[in-house]
Length: 521
Image (tube, rainbow, N blue to C red; front, side, top):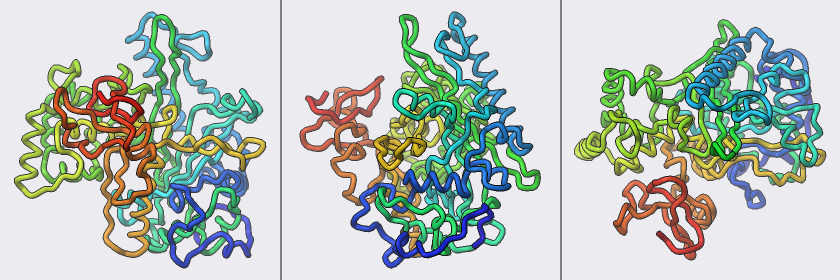
């Protein structure tokens, strides 16, 4: 076994926990995340306490399952992370004061803009607990030699507030820390991607089984036995930097800070890094040369094809090192950090990066070269893809309070009686596509890494989601008619509603609505 996290030594659980014969979902396991994520509360509790606690993973040493934040951000490898968070807070406060001079900003309910309390990051009464483990081998197109990623997702939790009744929300401050690991070590490139995928697809058990964390760690055939500290690539944070309650003078708004820190094994430290595909909107709009360069780069037929598939990687020179995503989406704060205004339309930007004629011409050029596009078939489709490939844009899509994976709360007295959904509709709708990719990687067949829009999952012929909130069911994203035309926009023509439901407008003017009971508009 090659993983470097200290572990328990057990045996005898393998036959009960893993079924390797077929490597597909068992008939008694209806979970959408089967084989692609670990969301069992008992398993996560044991893993957190016996080997995958955040301090153990990031700092090493002996078992630290109940270690507080007092040690974490004081560690040399994490000092730069804390400093960067402080800078982002200072920048956020300064911008809020400039944009809304009449509002008060501070910690507590007496302020118009209520800030996240940064003292929690150093408090001995607060720690990060393991809230989920997610297989992202569907991202192997980023670095094929890594076989994709495995993500350890931690949620901030207080130990000085009883996780019961009304105190439950206070016990889970709104912040997640995501440790992203390469699915295999880049040093020895073992085992094969096929073997890693096989192990994950074999972990198909009902939620009430209560997976043994020790077996997951120590079994020769367990998927987590392949995870080690040398595979750490980066950490990602998502925290609710501020909350603006609704009042007579302001609308409700919640802002989330998104940051990424790359791991440098030579220095054994983390440093700020650009967010993947998070376009630096302000810089593009302020620099005409950079704007033209980005326009030429993205509209190149080869890049446009990858953009359409959802596998595009935008060069760092066009990207931002942080973002603030707001809910509800479309507010002024989020508009600055999203792609609002980059495409010609109903935005206040006088000179956008892309005009409608730019996009129409690029789509025609791609078609003339025989490039078949699956998703982007109109300027509206181009604009939507431009938004949902960004970190901020994706987080504003069908999230749960700004998070796509709030995670499992196993700190409750009886975690087996969990009723709270650990992830968003976006996350669950994605699992079929991710599992298809895992099967292809396991079997050594051709892998299709393409994905649809974040609003609506790419089903790849599966009927499993039909009639649910993910596809055609109540609450599904659907296509509205364009202006006075009977037909919807070409990019969303397949976004329909089941019988008895109709597509109705939701939110600000958009070609996308939601499936509800009632008369269509």
